[in-house]
Image (cartoon, rainbow, N blue to C red; front, side, top):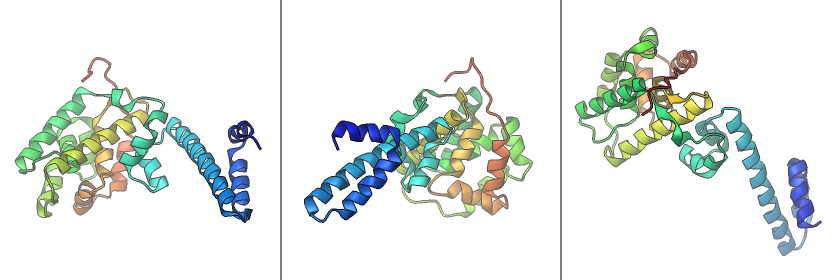
Length: 235
């Protein structure tokens, strides 16, 4: 079968091509022709994976969700598939309410003696920022004071400098992905809160759990809160 015919097969029915190439690779006795079939199989799988990732992004999945499905880190998924996103996440801007939450997060990091702003500080900033989101979380027992107490009772993680800043940037990047998935024009505090709960170090989610509030209940409450859009509040 010619290369052009194979490409056409991938576009029409990639799963059929993948199955055929897998069968041919397994059935080929000579090692070199079998390796050639494996190379073709990898190319078909890569294209099929890209198509499915693009479909997931168009349907509103975040890079974090895609990373979990593929068993890779969110950062690796973003690097590998960011060009497939229907919208450039980096173009999303912070609302004025969200900027205040980030400023408060910086204050919390300074007060705690941390050398960088991490996920837990960003969630604290959201809790202190006021408005409907912080009130909704207070209603289920997640207050800034309670959250801060649970954080101070835990041993601080190692590598608080640039590593903490990297974690904070990762949270903001994921908040942008969540905003994009919700078709929001601006990143809002609820997007930051959701991203902080998913932070890889688990400190924000751990402190929430220590209060007696489940991260699932927080996600449910935030999922019911529509993103607010402020057309005149670009960062």
